Length: 128
Image (tube, helix red, strand yellow):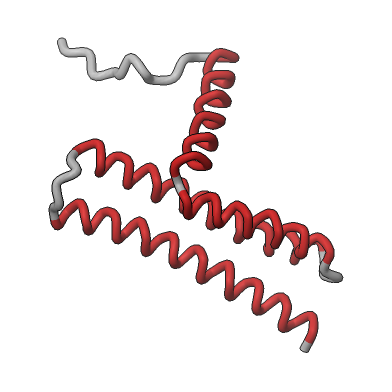
């Protein structure tokens, strides 16, 4: 019988937790080093988080304002992972590769749109 389990599959117990932590740290470093969009969005996140914390709104509204920014970063990282897999398979131009990359980009655009609308609604309700 063929073994269908990857040698890279997770370990158990504390080893698994430590391994996941180090893999995540490597992922953040890779995103910072290789993804210009992630760096831009992280700068926006840091500035906007400071603004959200300073706004005279409820703790829940602050959480929502910061949460939608975290969502943008999450979707950007997933998009970057998708692009890396597509490029790993082949750098040749192919309609399916373009489609996969375009869908990832559309997901990022939706997350950014949600963040923008959320900020507008909270600020509008607070100041108008």
